[in-house]
Length: 144
Image (cartoon, rainbow, N blue to C red; front, side, top):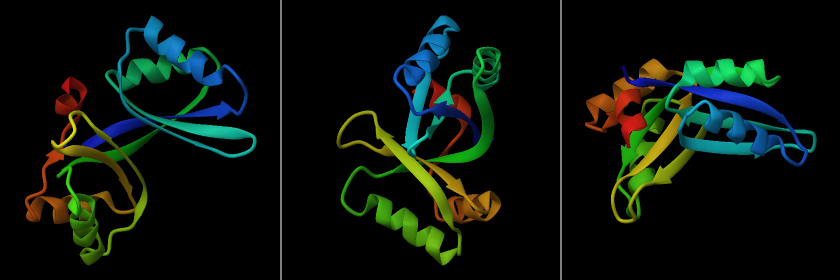
């Protein structure tokens, strides 16, 4: 399956809340593969790709966190000047809007992984596949 399940955790913007999330995940033996944290004055949204989304969601909810899920797409991008630009050009040509994205690189100089949230996942996936872009499934991403 090309789509990944991402969990979003709403955090009060106060000391120790992020620590509480990671403590819960450690105790549940859940590995974080990618994350993004965006904040406002009062709260933050922690977006996570984890090794066991269902278990993470359950554990966090049981500990009082508000947790949601979203479908996202992981794409392999060349870690060189223009790598991201090339992907963005494909998406622009398909008239796909990017709601947000975050990235990580395992080894410098190798391919980067970008997690995308699209307004139209189906159109994005079709354009990426037709263009020969490697879309990474959840099982492969969790093993990286």
